[in-house]
Every structure is written in C-alpha cells, then in structure tokens.
Amino acid sequence: MSQATTPVDENKLNAFIGQMLSDLGGASSVAMIRMGDALGLYKLIDAKGPMTSSELAKTAKVDERYAREWLSHQAASNYLTYDPASARFSLPPEQAMVFADEQSPIYMMGGFDLMAALLENQSKVQAAFKSGGGVAWGEQAGCMFCAVARFFRPGYQNNLVASWLPALDGVVAKLERGAKVADIGCGHGWSTVLMAKSFPKSQFIGFDFHPGSIEDAQAHAKSHGVSENARFEVGLAKDYPGKDFDLVTCFDCLHDMGDPAGAAAHIRQSLKADGTWMIVEPIAGNSLNENLNPVGRLYYAASTMICIPTSLSQEVGSALGAQAGEAKLQEVIKAGGFKSVRRATETPFNMILEARP
Image 1 (cartoon, rainbow, N blue to C red):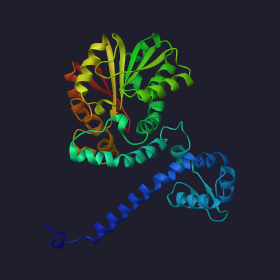
Image 2: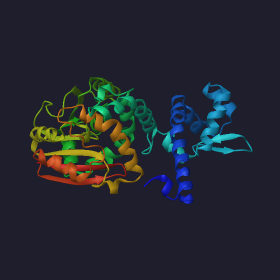
Image 3: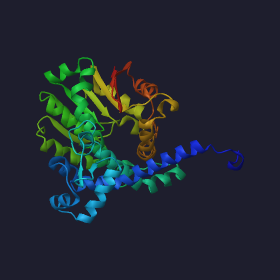
Image 4: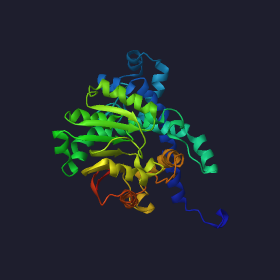
C-alpha cells in the first residue's frame, strides 16, 4: 500500500520523530564522549568536582572555547549537570560509573569505541552485503579488537570470578587446587589474566587466531604479574594443542566462529572426562520477537557489522550471529559431542552456559 493511500497518525509520527532526535543525539555524542575520554575530561571533573569551562581548560590544558562547547553538549545530553548560578559543570556519581570509573561494572567507554569502529567498518561490510562474503577479524577497520576487548573487560572483571565460575559445578574447587585451563578466543587476554590472578595454583593458556591480540595478551600478563601461570599462543578453536584440560572457556566468541560445531568437537576431545566447558555468549531469546529490545538492538547491530562478517570469512561460515539464542547454541554444542548443557547463570548482557561431556 502506498504512502499516499495510508493515513498518517500524527501522534505516532511525532513520537517517531522524537525517537529519531534521540537516536541522532546519541550518534552525535559518540565522538564527543570519546574526546572527553581521550582528553581525560571526565576523570578530571570526577576528581576535582564542579568546574567552569575556564577551570576545566586550565586543568586539562585544553582550549577554553572548545571546552565550553563540549561542556554545553554534555549538559544538554544529561551526561553532566550544569549550575547556572556558578556556571559550573559536574559529573553525577551515576554518570561517573559509566564515564570515569574503569572498575565500575557499567563502565561503557569501550562501547563508544566499538560504535566508532562499526561506522569505520561500514564500507567493508556494505561490500560484503553484495558479495555474500566475509570480513576477516584482522581485516576489519581500525582497532576493532581493541574496542571489543575494552567493551567486554568490565563485565569480565566484575562477574567472571565473583559469580560466573562459582555457578559451574565443582570448577572453583578444581581451580583452587590447581587445574589446567584453556581460554579459547582469548583476544587481548583479559579473561585469562583475571582467572590467573585469582587462581595462582592453576595454569592457563590463552589461544586466539589473531597474532596482534596474542601480543597484547602477553603484555597484559606481564604487566599484571601472571606470566608464571598464564601464557598465550596463536591457535584456532578447531586445532589448538593440548589434552586433559580441566576447564575450557569461550568468552563471547563461539558465535563468531566459522565452524562452531567443529570447535565444539575439538574442545570436547581436549577435555578430561570430568572436564567442563564454560561458554559465555550474548544474552538472547530463541526468537526474533524476544530480542526486540534495547539490548537486542545493540547486539543485532554488532552482529551485522562484526560477527556475521567474521564468521563468513572462515571455513563453513555458520554465521550464528550474536543473537543466536540458547536453543541454537545448545544444538551446536551437542553436535560436538557434549551430552549435558545448562544455563548456569546470566547477566543483563550475557548468558553463561556449562557443557559437560
């Protein structure tokens, strides 16, 4: 039916225009937020308290006119508050958890880096739409892997040792005694390093198919003092070396693999008979309708721009996508020879699955 013959509901139109203004405002904020982070402006305001544009410019050693405009945008966006009587801007504690506190479970700076990387990746993915091909992880625009690592780190830091590992049957006790662990698709190694710091009697090996990420992971292990019980190697999920692992982990990467069922089969044969595979995946329902929400919106965008192109660049090219859902993931895991799969726990952004042989 053409637009000419379809009556327009003015209320719906106005509501949708309001949504578009909000969306454009968010999109326009990505560069502003990333500049505030790169220049240390959020952390300065958080540390020093309310500041005028002149005070911020002097403290941060930036130009006052630029600082004034940036501060005005931040106030208009509800990122900072503004007191007209003193002409000072402040960072509320709730916003500080998002913008300034790197230890916060809701620190989101990595998410804004990721949004910039998605935009930079557009031309490559747009070409793949036509060809049906993929875009390899190491060929994606900018430092996509840097943004992804920064985005996921707060969740791992605040949940992995505190709640995810304890949700697995008997795993923490093994780690405390001394276990052998493989972290597959480890990226920059933050998940591996966190586990190695918490369980010094266990040995951890991180594998990733991207050499640049392995170099960064090795540097992170050294800087965090876990080089004695954590090491990193370039390796594929389908043929990494080693046997008799007590625990194998995959953090937000199974759906990116070209052949996740093949990876599951290799992981199965690399485990001890009583071993455990922990799979951390984006939270999702099993149908599109269940995923039509703000979290699903973000994950479908990331899936279109990162996950599907990455999978399609590899052999098999299953292209599960970031919103595959637990039923599909269980199907893939069991195809690899695992008999038992359960959802051990979850967060608003992740589901944690436990697979046993």
